[in-house]
Each structure stands twice: as C-alpha cells, then as structure tokens.
Length: 98
Length: 371
Image (tube, rainbow over all chains, first blue to last red; front, top):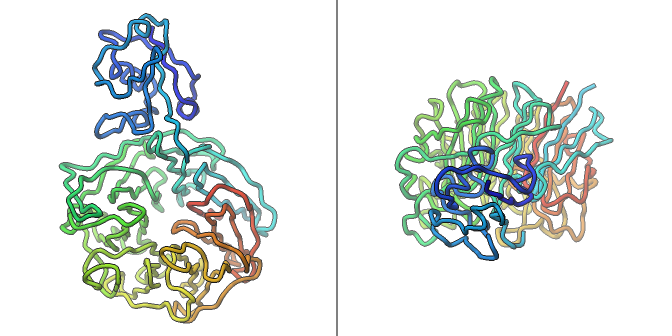
C-alpha cells in the first residue's frame, strides 16, 4: 500500500483526508502513483499534472524520504521505503506568494 | 417578493450575496473555493439554481465547479479543455510563433434554453462548449482556425477570450471578444467565424484599423435589441448598430475613455454604464474619484453617478466582468472593485451603497433576479 500525502486545497476539492492509501500493480513510479490517484479521485485530474503535456505543474513539488523528486523522470522507481509503505510520497504545493 | 442573488468571483474564492427586492439588507455567504482565483461564475437562465464557477490558479490549474442548489453546495465537474486537432501557433509578445496552451477559463456562459449547455471562453483564446452540465468540453475550433488566429497576440493579461454573447433572437448567432485580437461573430452556432472590427481604431498597433489586433475589453447587448452592441475597448467606448459590421465611437464627454467594463440597463436599451479608468498604466479612476458614468442616449452624452461612491483617495479598478444588472422594475446595478468592495445601486445608478467592503480583489460580478 502506497501512502500519498496531498496539499490541503486538493483534499478539499476531492473531499478526502490529507493521506490517501493506494494499491499499485507493477513498478511504483511517480507516474504510476499519480495515475492511480487520479483513477480513484478523477476530480484531481489536471490539478497535479497539466492535462495536455502530463508534466508536473510548475508550483507542485514531489518529495519522499527527505528528497526532492520533482525533477526526476516520471518513470523512475520511487524509493523502497515508499514502496513498502513506510514513508509517504508527498505532493506539495510549492512555497510561493499569491 | 423577488430575490436578488449576486455572484462574486474574487482572487481568493467566491461569494454569494443575497437580498430581497428592496436590495438594502444583504446576506453574504462564502468564501466558496477558498484560496482559488474565481475568474467567473454564472447562473443558468433556464434553471437559476444551476450555477457554474471557474476556480483556478497557479498551483493547481483550472477546475470547474457546479452547483444545483443556487450556490449552497458545489461539485467539481470536467476540467479538460483540449484544443481540437493540431493546436498550431499564435504570435507571442515578441512576434514569434507560440504554441496554443490552455491556461485558464475567463468566462462561462450558460445558454438560455438548456441548463446543461454552457460555453467557456479560455486563455489561450478559444471557445469551448459543454452539453452535459460541464462534465465534458469540446472546442469550437472554427474560431481559432478561421484564418487570423496565427496573428493573434496576447495583451498584458494574456490571450484571453473573455466575452461570450448568445443572440436571443437570431438562432445560431454568437459574439465573442478576445484580448488582444478583437471581436468575432458566428452565425452558425460557432462553426464558422469572422472578425467584426471595422471602425475600431487602436493607436497601439501598427495599422490602426487592422482587421484584428484590437484590445477589446468587453461587449454587451440588450436582449430586446441584440443587433446593437456596446463595447469598452482598451481606449474608446464604441457602438455598433449592425451586429458588429461597423463601429463608431461614443466616448463623448467621458473624463477618460479607457476602462474595462460596460453594462446596459435591463429595461432601457439605450442606457449604458461605464467606469472610466485613468489610463492603461494607471488602473484607477481619474482624480481618485470612483464614478460610474451613465448615458441615457446610447452613448456620446454621459453623466457622472457619484452618490454613495468614494470621491477622494480612491485608487481601485473595476475589471471587465465585474459589473452587472438585475431585472427588477427599478434596475439594480452592481459592480466590484479590486479593493474588495461590491457596490449596489437599487435605482439605476442614482445612489450607491457597498454590500461588502473587504472581500479579496473582485474579478467578476453576475446577478440573478429570482421570483
């Protein structure tokens, strides 16, 4: 079971708790996690990745195990503690004014 | 007694303001979608409890929310705005080709007949339609692809389609306006389009009366006389008698003919309202005095309406979608400011009072008149 922590505005949008548990078949990558998240909560489509390009939105960051994974290719396997469900995969609204 | 519901989109959420027909005592609900920029929200004429809203922002992109109970509760619907076919390019600020990229929804326009059918004007400029209550959206590519699209260039606010007018008398006639491309008309439900900018003159473009390239800020019509259009252009207030085939300037004695918004009285087709702004670099009223100007002659002759509005030290703006009217016997006029005030006049502009003073910057104001 993969643990995913979401930013508060997306929790409000999808009416879910901050942490979501996801089952993922196959390789656990950032793309697989977000695909699974959007399949369960389709109202989140387009909010984390741009619909057209599927690229991470500029003010979204992906963290896990005290590492910034935001710039990693989407098919890079996630760290083992995330795969094992020990550590959460963090989807973060970047610190930015506005 | 009638009820008036004012739908207010702001930089940090949406608010619903409600009053009875006297329009003196108001209740304020919100913020809905707290923290999200709400460029626009609008109710369906066919079912006033059906309201569409367009919250978005830099963090999480665009979502569309729908209420089926008059704004009490909301549910997200579809937010995929995908350009049809090869999106191609428009001009970038430096004149180079730039790929068409969806950024946000500027305006939502539900149809008069069907609460499930709604148009969306978006940035980069395109027109979308949903026929299933906002669940799915399809582009009407004839606008973007009619021939001038490759030459459109964004204004300072982006290449945005911000005005959608559905002709209530001529089936299939739609007007849109785009900054900074101009006005366009379709007579076949959006399948084909052509520019309608003859008579516009814009000093900021190389050919002042070019077919496209004009920074149109907003167009309005009166539903009983839809062939007559009123436009607030970047500079100049304009009027067309012939469904946009030609335009003439009606700025007359306005203290500035720069502005963002324009509106028409609900019962008097030749009574028009504007809010003059000092200039395109000084986005506040001339002399620090917030004045709505009203013409009862369809333009050229304007009177300042000041009773109840701040007449000193006022440096707010009124954005393009931030003025609306109700349809009660004494027409109510409403506008919101970038300072977070929403003003209401229950007497067609003669007197004004703030409904609320301290909202986030107001982006849009729409009004529903309920039985």
